Image (cartoon, rainbow, N blue to C red; front, side):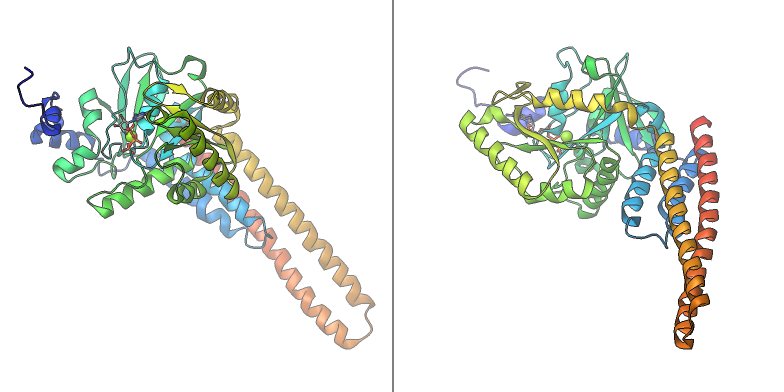
Length: 418
Ligand SMILES: Nc1nc2c(ncn2[C@@H]2O[C@H](COP(=O)(O)OP(=O)(O)OP(=O)(O)O)[C@@H](O)[C@H]2O)c(=O)[nH]1
Ligand SMILES: [Mg+2]
């Protein structure tokens, strides 16, 4: 272009990029959809996973009605376990590894952050980044020998080429009015450029932004819901915010809904855009907000995904990833978690049954020794109720053991099937 030529406007710059064939050619776009549509016949592994989910989320709870205050905590553990089991396809893929979920509002730089952690100079496959809403399908990034992309949809795995992966963003929805998120659960990118020290210990989960100003509110809700479910199965979370906005209420709301038991790392991204003093102020303010809101956090740091570096003399990203990978062994061992949880509940049944038994005996003695007829009457009334509770607890324990037996059998089928 000569100096007297008109400078290219944004539209022309965009058009000068090589067109993605799946976005440029509707026929190819529809072929991609057809390839990924689920078979109507659900496969058996899917059914098993769903059965397990129902047993953990609903059936077990009905047996715990007579438990005291800790039912809520148990319920959370059961739900978390069932979320993990629903991610059954990935259990083998993720086996022994911690999931580090990257969350934040749209365009905070989540995908760019993950790209910056990969040795991307040689990588062919990187996550799509754009200033418009981009990521629409939760994407796992996993260390592997070769670069490879797969889609998990309806219990099936489909290999994808790079163009297809890059087309499966919000741009596809804008082009065709059809989103993938309802029938493609995940994309998985295998890459040899994964940080080598953590390669066998962690995987990253890139997520859609949770405040997309989407054209279709319903699509948006589904996306948000799907992303939230998957984030709940993560072991560690990194919240990305920008140096322009810092932490806002929407971040706190989301984090409170999906909190893991491990502390959270907050990354104030795009630090290259502001002087160091501004970055420091945003980080300090963020620290205050997190503390005030009682959020369990590992640290908060200023970072630039573009420069791949951390500011203010901190090295928290690396420390956090090292911390997450040290914890990996105990995570994702779903079978061990299942065993420990059932043992825990079984012990509680023991305690409750013994307590009811003792109370029944004590009341029996009291009735035996009572002389006043009114006292005997009211004691007998209580005695009846305690006997009922005792009977219920014993019955429920039987039911509970029954369900656990079924869960174990289903789980083995799931792990060894296919
Ligand atoms: N200056 C600067 N820009 C950045 C940085 N990180 C990301 N960006 C830009 O911010 C925009 C959004 O980045 P993405 O990585 O797509 O953000 P995201 O959070 O994945 O966005 P969604 O997938 O839409 O939720 C892109 O234009 C990036 O180039 C950074 O460290 N510095
Ligand atoms: Mg993204």
